[in-house]
Length: 638
View (tube, one colour):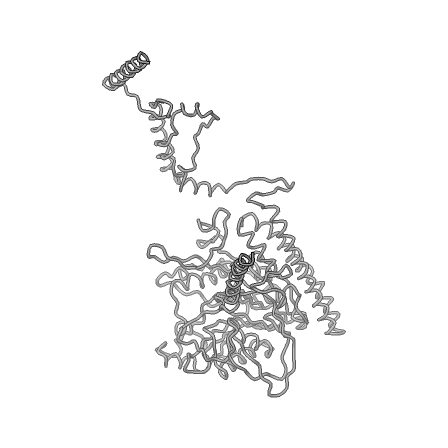
């Protein structure tokens, strides 16, 4: 017994060790950085807000709401820097005497920063750099009040400590301005980074999705664009650029792209542009890497002004209604799933292929829509509409810039990527979304209803909440912040509690591939018609039943004509056009004629084709006579 127990224990320990190794791998695995960010200026929004979005997409990123309280530090204090992706210690930087509170990616002054990684030239990565892109964002948010100030701080930090990460695009917004910034390091032999930052013209929108997008830019107007002093000279030194300074393009010098890059990166920018400005009829040629195609513009003017809700919906894009529509094709399955499991690129018989990469994606850790408004005090005017998991099936919850602590359901420490928790917003939304992927076309309708109820409710209540907060703020800013903190906590709790209940309801409704109707009756709707057509086309002969299929005994069945295999082969595929349908009809008629000539023969159910030929008839009669003669002789001997 002891030895047997020992064997079980050894096996159990082995399994635990395997799981532990996997967990450690996940915790230290660098996220595959593939994010999306949209930029909306005051003049392009319906209410005068500036907005940026950020989807932090990585298959091993746990979505949670970071919170950093304001603090004061003594002279000479240092701050440890760890790479946001890997946790690697990069060193220490000088701490400032006073820092601002930060909720997610927005600080108490309504300054918001997002990013997407474009990578760029591999040789410009500097493993000895002292600050990474993630730390650059969150350190800057603790130190800057405006977008322009943020750009200066970011440039100063990488110059003093060196830039560790690959190429990044940053979205930077305060209540009045929105800026677009491209940055890349100088490689292992030089400290610092080269970068360009341009202000998005008021009334315009922009976007980036893992591809540097600033090409040529004004070099003599700091109100419009600012840049590192060596952004052009460094490119010349490295051999990336030759020509006049006025013709210098950041993206051409530092981030050349292949067809795969354009398809999975610029495709998201194109889709955002085509939705907000359909009148421009921007072609998809550049996304499809057509020779001579014009690059997408850095920014465009939308056909109409955009609301916060509009921007949320842009984050839920799957290329619907376009040639890249992910809900179409065999990859979408029978229930039009607008996702493709990774990897994005794959090979078959020596050729390379790519799946589309939409803005809404299953591996989102967290995403947000920031809203900054100059007509309100900072604690009230700034809202980080925050969500976790897939943007298409999540809920954007209002987190005001003035809150003093995050809701537990979204807070750091409530759960982790390797530890499921029913209290965690991340796991609740993943639970529901992953169940929805099994029957997406039907289940997403139920999800969107609850999602819409919440978000509409937030917008309808927003004016009332902010009027109350403003009244409190005039008497006591601290009381206003406490009020907003309580509101954000309550909404978060309501959402996560309801989402758990929604998961239970969906499991009940769609159990085992069935669907309960509104009365609770279990129904079997089957697959969509288009999917049955695909099945018939691929293996119709395998699944086909006889047109007439009466219930028979084995003896009766044995005496029946054979299954009409020839007919089945003729109807093997579902006709796709009139010519195929006509051909199939002709084949059916031909086989019907042939079947009329078949006669049963013997208990085995075999058959042969009778013929009016005299020679065949004579042979048949002779065979009968011989059989009769032999049968008679056998009986006589018996």
